[in-house]
Image (tube, rainbow, N blue to C red):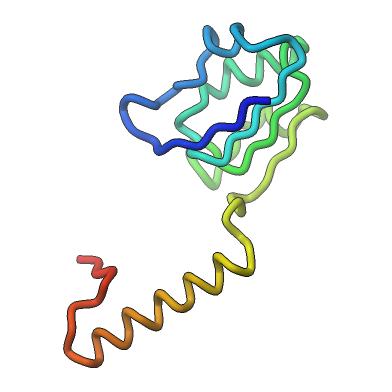
Length: 116
């Protein structure tokens, strides 16, 4: 298994490319819950089609919400709609964060997550 967890930066764009995919053991499974740009779609699709990789689980995609159309033709690919963080605990924490920002704003304080 290779599970990818990193930000999308100029240094990580296509971090998982054809060369690195070919270094993985045959039959490996790739899971990407990081960012779509971290994976070279064409290289991943090619490896899935030729059986180099057993499967891929993708929660993020280049050019979301558009998904590379070839992914939809693969029976060994599991596509999720960017819900990797969708747990009850995470959603509760997001809600409490909103409340903390509203409380700060209406109390005349700087909101912790101010967006300009």
